[in-house]
Image 1 (cartoon, rainbow, N blue to C red):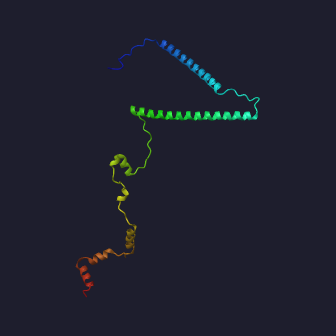
Image 2: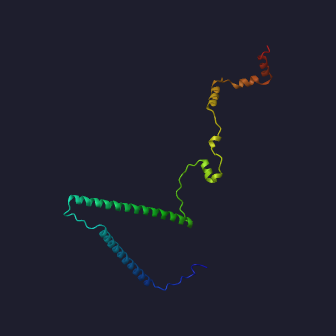
Image 3: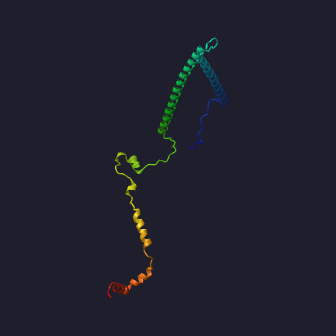
Length: 191
């Protein structure tokens, strides 16, 4: 069926009625928000009133003022410890929330691929990761390479440099045919 031919059922509430309900809900929400902020401010003031009684400095001697300062520093230390503990709890909970979100994404199948980093892994480590404990042999590729001695190459170069350079064409003509063999025979001691 064509989706254009399917008609949506008409709403029983008129557009003006919807608009008026929406306005009423928004005004009610704004009133509740204002009430919450006022309640929070009152609660804060009452808490501070309980924890911090008003200080009176008049008529105190120097020793009494020093004792008062020490007490205030002690209270500040306690509050700092509580604040630190609360921050540690919040960071731990945030980390747990993040891990749970990742688990939910894994279960849902919608997972963002993280940016991959380059990792240097040897052949042995790669085979161990793929095969686990089944991998026994060593994959040290450098040990299988043929070793070349530098001394041999130096001797070959010395031979090439020390040998006389002669015209090879003369040598070939002289040795070719019977004449060349005869000359060799004659030269070897046939005289």
